[in-house]
Image 1 (tube, rainbow, N blue to C red):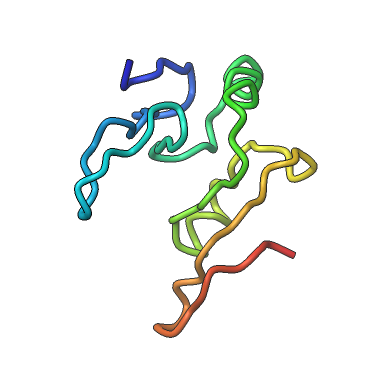
Image 2 (tube, one colour; image 1 turned 45 degrees about the vertical axis):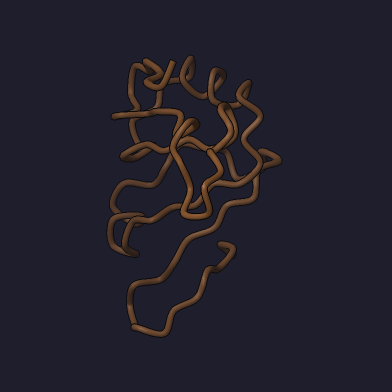
Length: 96
């Protein structure tokens, strides 16, 4: 199942099954994507944690992250990465 229904997450889906540039295929239940995680309910958080996600890449701008922080607990054992869009030579960072 590609689309996973959550109460507060928009367009949360498994991107498994898509072909890669080198002819392989993305494995199912390994990579997920979603619009934003600011509206997750407590039930959503429990379901997402059960997926075993190890790394969260937050692709939103600095301003978006400040205005609508995601509800994923920083103490959760997933690595949280983001990219600062304040300047063009930004690199992936771990939040302080």
